[in-house]
Amino acid sequence: MEKKRILFVSQEITPFLPKSEVSTIARKLPQGVQENGKEIRVFMPRFGIINERRHQLHEVIRLSGMNLIIDDMDHPLIIKVASIPTARMQVYFIDNEEYFKRKAVFTDDKDEEFSDNDERSMFFCRGVLETVKKLGWKPDVIHCHGWMTSLMPMYVKDIYNNDPHFSDTKVVYSLYDDSFNKNWDDRFAEKLKFEGFDEGIIDAIKEGDHNSLSKTAIKYSDGVVMGSEALNDDLKEAFDNCDGHKMEFESEEVQPKVVSEFFDKVIEEEALIQ
Image (cartoon, rainbow, N blue to C red; front, top):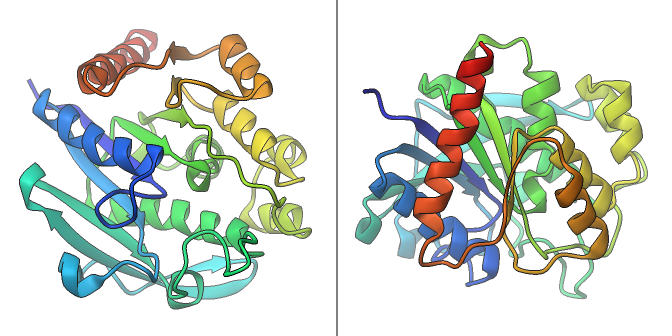
């Protein structure tokens, strides 16, 4: 039987970035799912604080060279890769000088969220999807980690809904207690419109706040996972009331096996529907 293909997309992964709830899960879960018999690919942004020499990042020339248009501006897409030898796992990095060269991750030296985090998220999500297409690798499931991936379910289900490469792809979104304080750019709705998003999606997330992005990601996902043991009341209610498959929080020890089985459930239901 052909192995199921799982694409992990995370805003942070250790050891490339400091340990956090998201970065730790996004490091261990792909390895565990791979050991449970799945084929995986893993993507994250190439933030400027990542030490390329220490982690031996190198550019993948055959995948680089595309330009992505964000808000009517061309932005070169550079793809890099590094290995985690102890996990027999490769990580692909989405890079762009304007969005990711700065020596910081989400906030400036005054702990203020960057004003272009909306565009960085858009570039990251689209960059992943375009790179996977160029790889010729069709994922059965895309599993999203962190608010920087919150647009991914809407990209897959709306912008890429007629793309045969993702016609059978399911999306699973993990909810974390990783909110941000500053709403995304005032022109966020205009940028979404330029991307070609459905008016209903634009209306739902135009304020660019964490809760509306997360709740809309839930709505457009086929499965939702509680990545954090505790969520704010608004998101916990959205999780409890969502129509798709749901997975409650599980401890790190059992998570890979349980999540791998959760993927099977999400994929199998799609096959039954067809």
